[in-house]
Image (cartoon, rainbow, N blue to C red; front, side, top):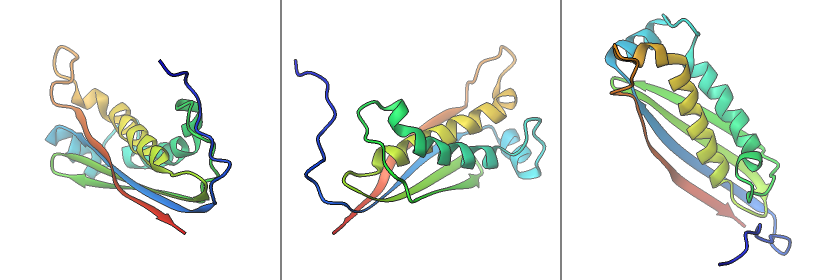
Amino acid sequence: MAEIRQVDVSGKEVVRREAVARGFIKLRPETIQRIRSGALEKGDPLQVARLAGINAAKLTPFLLPLCHPLKLEHVEASLNVMDDGVEVMVRVVAHEKTGVEMEALTAAAIALLNIWDVVKQYEKDESGQYPLTEITSIRVLRKVKEG
């Protein structure tokens, strides 16, 4: 079995990199209504998720030990409240020697987890379980390497 190691990117050129990742959290209709009306005890899950996603992109090398620390130039998290849940889209841009897909994926995942955290009390059933809540479809939609 091969030994774990970080990939050597020292010989690669610095180019513009961009990645867009998406994810979705399925929520109860009652929870969606609370989000839309602003009636949540912990506050606005969309603002919490946006900030947490941006922060997560910057912290990716601490969570994924083989990722290179990158100087991210732009992280944008957008959220779309739908009838059955919330869609998260994250765009990450940097001029680097390696791609930013993991940063975009990490940001999307953490944004979704923060939504769950803010709304969890409304998602539980009578026995304290989450029968409908589900995070799905976390994936890279687009990856760009220029230069």
